[in-house]
Image (cartoon, rainbow, N blue to C red):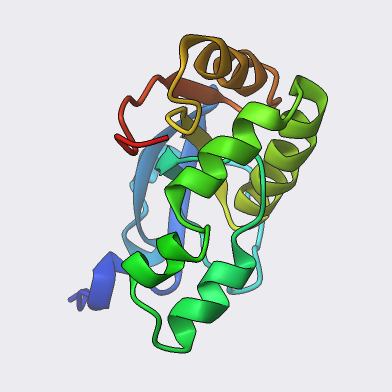
Length: 161
């Protein structure tokens, strides 16, 4: 009898693929006879998992908030960070100041990192422009990212800008 593993993991599993579609998944010992004669490939104990979908990213933006992160690690509140010139308003300012080439270069670095971590689909939200011109610029950049991307206009990240 097959014992279910945590998180749905199946040890010594088999995957039957036909015409580019997954037709069956389960313990190799339970492989249906209809797939028994198929070509096999030993994956050497690797974990096989569906690709990931990151459904909420803001990878198209200007600026860098690493200093704010350090402030937060040091105990500063979000309000203290904002009073020091940081927070969402600083990203809005940097995004408005950035041209499309700069926004794209930054977004591609983030997209490459997400792909390396297993994401196959990335939803890119705008929202750091807070004006029509910048929001449209951000969405144009999102369309230029090579991985499968969906893009969404996300309004009102901040009400003061």
